[in-house]
Image (cartoon, rainbow, N blue to C red; front, side, top):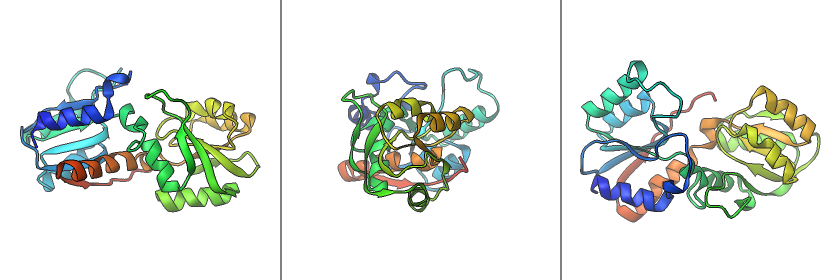
Length: 249
């Protein structure tokens, strides 16, 4: 598939122009013009680049790419090594951040609900850029049972702040969305799930009366980019492989 045609198809699907994001979405590093093999992953780390080279990939498609706001603009050190490796091997890098969180079918939030078996899952507003979702568990659980579900399905032991009540309704936003716990509490849910936890999150959960589960930034954001890769296989017959490189946060 032609690189520009793939870029157009991804942009049409994910609609990045709707989002005010922290990084550029789309083609971040240009490589060869014809793409046959695509590697997908959560983050464009050096390790993922090396695995893509081993797989003889023409492109890498990730959730976390490069060129974040407020990072140093100079190309030195780690950034230099990553870019140098991509350019030397003529590998394209595509990255979609918030657009991949928000997509109503393929997005991280939609896919997390599917993995956890959450019923009636939907975004909390009809805005196409909405990042928080809510739904109900198939059956009421206590915090230990729900933590075990997260561990089993995400292969990550969550950090739990208890509200000492049964859990039936939940809200969630994958990744580093712990600061949205107050918004979750306003929805009246029993529990809120995101990827990371901060010191202030623990106090907020207790004072707001909401269970909080920090289920891993990487662990909660595996599923969107994998679903996006499956979409490319189905609709464009591309050779796509997902490579998971778990990290402890």
